[in-house]
Length: 315
Length: 315
Image 1: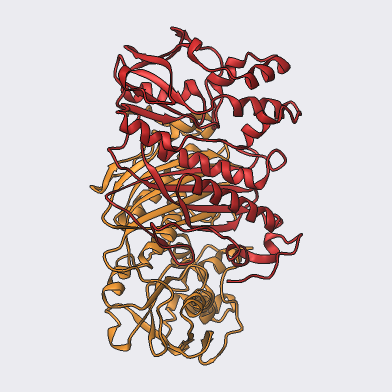
Image 2: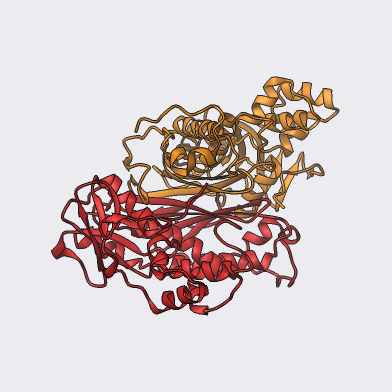
């Protein structure tokens, strides 16, 4: 449908729910049998559907003064898409619900949608439907569906003797958050990392093919999320901090703010790298071994209890 | 996992995200390959997935002083489940995201979850995953997935000459809302209807088997939602008000509040009956013919423009 140009200052109240929805423009892949616009969408699948939902709330997961609508869209989509990769799955479709105040800029909502659609496309998924409604703060719920070529890789299959490996950036978003929280806007690479995750989507299926015994995406913090694998698998995970990559950007933010840069790596969330356990000989290309599974429970760092902040707490 | 009993006044902040999640108890059907607790859930399907998302916001879609948590859960689940039925589909799984203030009673959240699970069960679906996060008001996002035994019934297939038929209660929720909005708590049947929809889930597949040419669930209002079929199909829908069932409860609420009871039927939402178009000879049992498709555009009532409130506006 061709739409009249959007007045620059138009709010959601000005253009209405259907005025907004009709301006969304999500590319549809061949897997989509019926896209947005009906009571429900229809997606072609083979034998299984992998599904996950994430909700992001203004002031809690993002701030409109810290990131653009487009980056917020990419980030909230990435968080949900990474969950599908963490099962060894490949995302094919997504539905999005947006709650927002009527005074919200309509262009902001369109930019958000564009960011969501762009990130979905990076993972090979189409936005096939959604819901828009009024709320007192901006709330975005993203549900992603995907397929599993192999058996899904859960959190529960790690065995004593497996190595633990990581693929993707870790700690950058936490460094960016630390910078922003102190009122700074640089280094820009850290701020940009906070605004936008870059999950290694293809690495999930890669790990499944390589025989990963357990996998998770690091969304709340490395120590706390590896704790989920440890608990589900009945093992203890011992992280060797010497194996963790502490990138230059983390060193420089840490030095500027007086924070040990390893803190960002161990406790930081929002980067959505994948962590997986493998038999030692199975670690695929691009993955970095960071520790091992031993008998016991919980997560250790260099053989000892970690006493820093392990990760994000939701309440 | 066995949980310690929940202290009566426990809030979400007291028990935390994982304390809450571990107390959810959603039955899992045979279609569920992997249920809650991992990065994503895995559901067995055949060839297509029908998917829809609905977001409900406190103060906008429900009020905690007007309905119990259990009823609110049933209602928000029903709204999403009805969308799957409206495609001629059968729901098999659901993921739910909850945003809530930390001061929310943990028991309230558990009762909400129980209501969601109960309604999902009525439609044959399992709650397979979700997300819980902090928000300034209670926000619930429900994504339902289902299968299509036949080709999905869209809004776009109605033809001039088709009849329009309705199945399920219509107008009761609007009557209940009118009662509550004036500060009354009775008649209780109307208040209960506002609190809890009863969509005719099985009627969606029934209509598809009978050859329905178009179908929708009435969530915002009869006139406004039939307008979506009229627009998508390129027909005009003429409602014959003499064919509309104006139940006794609507008469009595209308008389008490000085509202024409037909207003509840034509403009009311939230009951989620199904409306579908059929060739005249195809109308299946339990469906009530309420009008017909004629050449033109939009929705008429008794051949004339309807000048009452057609339905709910989101912004």
